[in-house]
Image (cartoon, rainbow, N blue to C red; front, side, top):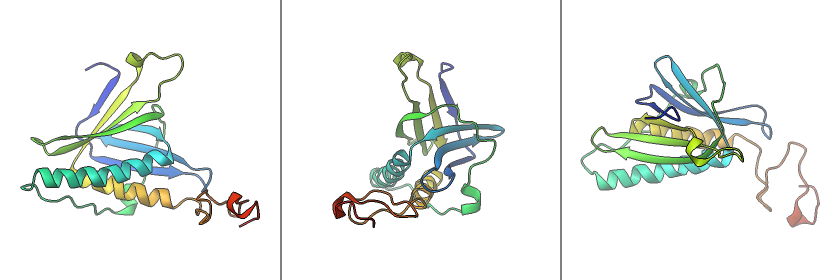
Length: 175
C-alpha cells in the first residue's frame, strides 16, 4: 500500500456533516479509527448521490447474500456530527462503494480531485471500511444533512435564498 492510499479499517465512526448557514455550507466526510481522524471536503451533490447509492448497494447485498441480516440504519443525531478538528486532507473528486463479503464490511472509497499539476498516479485515496449498519446510517444521515439547506423552488428546481429568488420559469418574478 502506498502513502497515497489510506485505509481506516475499520472505522469506529463515519459521518457526513455540513458547517455554515444554508447557501454557504461546506460539506465534509469524516472517518475515525482510534485516535486517527480523516476528514475530506465533499460537494452536496456527492453527499446526495452517495446516500442514494448506499441504499441501493445495500439492497443488492441483501439480495445477493440472503443469509446476512438486513442492515439497520438507525442513528443518534448527536453522534453523527463531525468531530473537531475539521482539517480536510483533500477535496473529493470521486466516491465509490465496495463490499468484502468474508468480513461483511462495506468500503466507502474517496478519491482526490485531480488538479492540473497532478498526474493520476499522484491522486490520494481514502478507504473507509465500515459495517453495513454504519454505511446505512451514513447514507440516511447524509440525506438529512443535505435537505437541511435552502428550500428548492417548486417551479425551476433551484435553491431559494431566504429573501426569495428570481425564477426563470416565472419570467424573473420573485418567488
